[in-house]
Amino acid sequence: MKKLLFLLLIIIMYSCDRDHPKIEIIENENLTQHQIDSILTNFKFEYDKPVFIDSTSQVLLPITTQHSERKKTFSRYSGDEYSWADYPRYWNILFYDKNSNQTRLLTESKMRITDYIVNIKETGAILSKSILYKIGDIDYNNDKKLNHNDPEHLFISRTDGTEFKRLSPKNEDLISYTLIPKSDQIMIETIRDTNSDLEFKPDDEKIWYLINLSSDVEPIEIINSGLRKKIENLYFEQWLKKK
Image 1: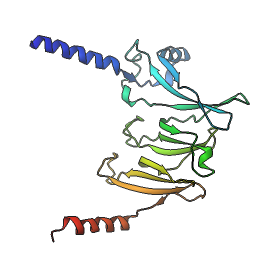
Image 2: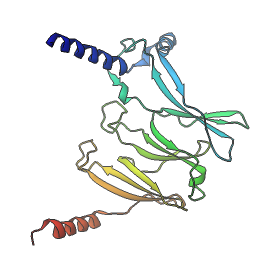
Image 3: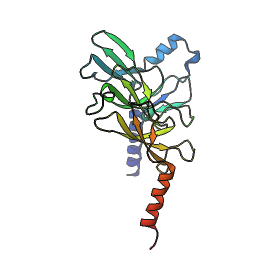
Image 4: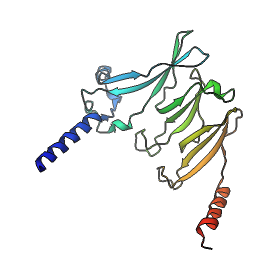
């Protein structure tokens, strides 16, 4: 019985490793183009189904990457590795104009695009002609990886991918955002690395901001330190302090 259980454990471990391969990071500064081409044959570039923007000629093709199942890793040009879970859902978006037959990439910078929303309804004139993105683009903990341990931010662009910019504070991790109906305002919640340990944890300070796209002002912190302290003291007096 023990031998059977051991054998099953080995099979499960092998299966998990096959389903979630390690992806090596390649230091390609000194590689020839032939070597680079050879490495890229192990990748299968995937384009999600087209996303059409209402009342425009714009089509989005989000780009992801599926590592070939034939090999678990690339040739060993480097010892550093990404796990399969660390790889981005999307790493870029291709914009195509059906009328002009022109294409453009959202960016040429390295980014992890977690999510995006298009065809935004019941909002103001700016948001209705925009795309919102959740993106990670900063190696915050300096581990030379851009993965789920690094913060995500709220970004915006026009429906053709132009005027692409960051909306949420740079070194805070985006938790959520809410569009205020019939306006160009967004409320966002972030986590601030309060103790500066280069990690975003549940016990770090949560911040609420108001972003007004119709003005050029920076995000307004709704709850400042003084108000936050007042709320905490009120809770202590009402619910924790023994009467």
